[in-house]
View (tube, rainbow, N blue to C red):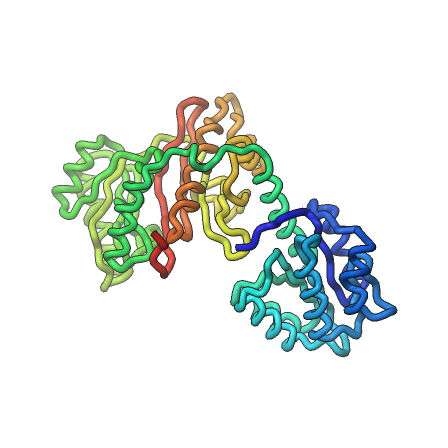
Length: 414
């Protein structure tokens, strides 16, 4: 993960028009273009042809080959006054897309780049193939200048946030010892994902309340849990081999009495055995059925380009359909988390509609910080998703219905 050390960006291109489009995008997304002409001349005059341009954007002209790009990029990397690079390539008679892909891939694998460098390649099938090849190995490359510049703009936004006085992640209280104990148990079992009871233990460790629940291994246990928790309850399959519970018929809602509890237990087992006969079934989770509120989704993941990022949006069954989600680089503070929540299109639902009260936005913001803090402090965690996280009226908090946590292939460095 590379971080900015300043705000001076340059554009390297083999097409003036593409450079102009990118310069416009830089203005749109808050990416500062370096304009010290004296320094730019000194840096690039030996790598740009006489009929090219050393003004930003740096125009290598349509005759540029891979070695010309290489020399221009090396010059930019060596200049401490240049902090990021947008490198553009459009199809021409001499531009070798496959050779360029090999060059960029080798440089990234060897860790040659000491500052953010984003690529945009535009053209026909060979260009598209090169883009796909580089994306598979984690190179930040795009086929649209607007998308590439928007991503670099996000890096700049993160840089500015870190220079502002935000809350330190150490101020967010989570039980690191309890989290470590859960993760060690998952690793010991040779898994990269957490089961239901492990996910609930993690939620307790980071201080996000979930439903009262228990894992039943027999029909009698399931009924006993339901009676103890109080109706209505929900039942869900617990299996390391069935991650998408609903697809397997492994979820039952609105269970209101003993008979329904017994019937639901049997039905879930039959459905899941039919769905995946060889699945290892660890039990059936019996949980309190959460009262209604606004269903949101809170998550975090470790991005190859941006490092830890957090996510918030409308949750439940609507997240895949509406895709009303906001992302931010982490760490961030409470104020920025609240702003992030306010950017989703359905934000009005959290402010209260048709006579409803405003929801507990402060509790949602704190949940975002807790999830981000856990991802930041535990390197082996790659993905966290709480969906739905039900938001209640102001000062009434939130409650997590389900959580999904994935781990990397490697053990964390202790």
